[in-house]
Length: 144
Image (cartoon, rainbow, N blue to C red; front, side):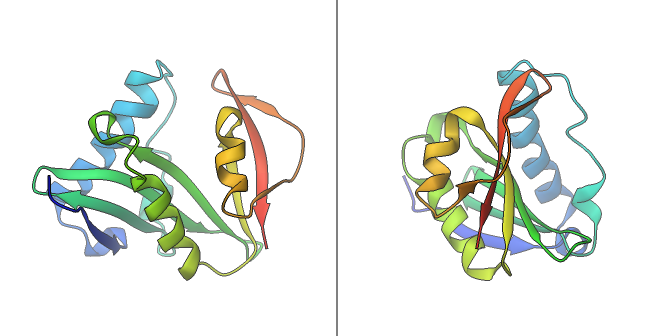
């Protein structure tokens, strides 16, 4: 199995096939696998400050995340996902580390609660009360 290559682009720099494959991976996990009907395509993927980060091998994207610029000047990390057959290889961690080297602080994330300790490993701290979004418990977290 080849070492996945890191990519980053704005939506305007993505070809149609790549955009499709990135969104398909997110939908496969967040909507289908997690059985959570919600508006995955929320309009933020096309904002000028949004950057799409992914690792790909010869079969396509194996891990994806996106970063957003918020109106208050903070950065937001989200939609972190790894293809089911590539989980456990540290791919999501590799992507998060890469994105964090590029993002201005502070960085916010609404982490699924069961992943909060994983995000603590990157330096994130809890930044509010747990809330339920689309039937899944989340914790607001902040870095920097």
